[in-house]
Image (cartoon, rainbow over all chains, first blue to last red; front, side, top):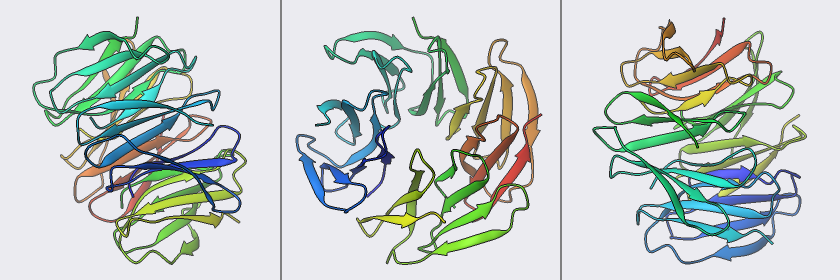
Length: 70
Length: 70
Length: 70
Length: 70
């Protein structure tokens, strides 16, 4: 995995993976909450929006994708 | 695409691309708002200024460039 | 070393290293406070939680790990 | 250049370069304010402390260095 960020409220973590997905995790339990699928190459960098409602990811596929964080 | 950041107000996203450009996107609609052209090699990392008015990018061309975010 | 971040209170620094560890440093003295061991390949990116109590790391081993920052 | 960050007050930018240095720039004029020399391999990632007084850099030389930002 490469890029990583905490949500602004600290409750979730998002990671970017070479397996083309980004994943949202519960920061306390470590449980996987969501798998963000759509990139056609590995995901690289990630960021949460300041309000924690959106996630953006970049990928080797040369696209950026915006996801609902919930 | 590689580096990515939300603007402090969460309304825009900036991404850095191997195509030598950085691009500013509307975070809600996904519409491309600006293409920042000038780097002579791929763009790598990006950041918004705390007031959201400026963007800085770095590049394989070993320069950093500051852009008006509007 | 690759990824780096200050704790929100500015007192500690976390770094990710190709030696598979992340390390927490005292930002003033430069003294190493903790070595975070567990990744089976090099560590890449790091982030502190907003409250400074947790650290997350990513690694070439394609896992993310959450650590108690204290 | 690779890693980049604005100072918390938005007045300065720090960049990390493959030439082993990090550089502090005036965000408005683009003038180089300081060259941070000491890494023995290329600099990779950078961060400002929350109070803007310190900069930390990482490097391919597998060290992190803390610098006075002023």
